[in-house]
Length: 210
Ligand SMILES: C[S@@+](CC[C@H](N)C(=O)[O-])C[C@H]1O[C@@H](n2cnc3c(N)ncnc32)[C@H](O)[C@@H]1O
Image 1: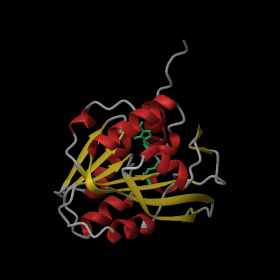
Image 2: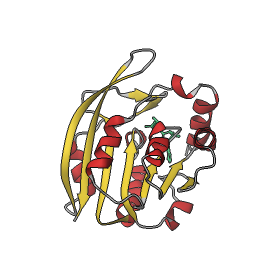
Image 3: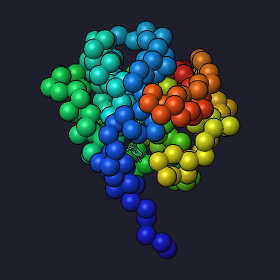
Image 4: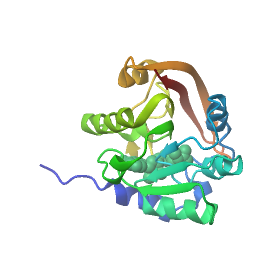
């Protein structure tokens, strides 16, 4: 059997070799995610889990708006370090460097009120990765909790950051989550990179656990 691909090094290299704003998924205003989070009308001390957060400005925005129970994950310590340097010494946030497809520390995560994943799940092209991810998610979302996915759409790009991706539709996400989760909203979104103008077709979905 071939050696397992070292995703941790892959992502550390991506963050070490590029400034945050050069990355192909960089947003200077993560409005689509933020607006969906606000729509859920959860209290400011609700447990928000950001899967594969990278160095996203969403985290700082949520803190600024008063959300104070943020749990931020990434496989890459470089991503988390660059996020930490952006955020500074704020309270209300904890960092978990762990692999969503082979969770260790993440198994001890508290129950989640809102799970946010932008451009992470679509990298899990292998069945065992998808199963591990959804097992973790389903075991951690509280009844009444929310899940936001933002992934490359069916007619979107087939690769990102040199890796193959799996394109998603709302039906695929519903199938993966199962009947316990109700789709509340879904829309297509054309991402524009703020400096180089590259576009990517995303689908955004908001689900709620019964
Ligand atoms: C395309 S970036 C998106 C980052 C961020 N969500 C955003 O919207 O800016 C994908 C992120 O997922 C992280 N990632 C990839 N595989 C992961 C895994 N198995 N477990 C945790 N994080 C992972 C990467 O390090 C990277 O930060």
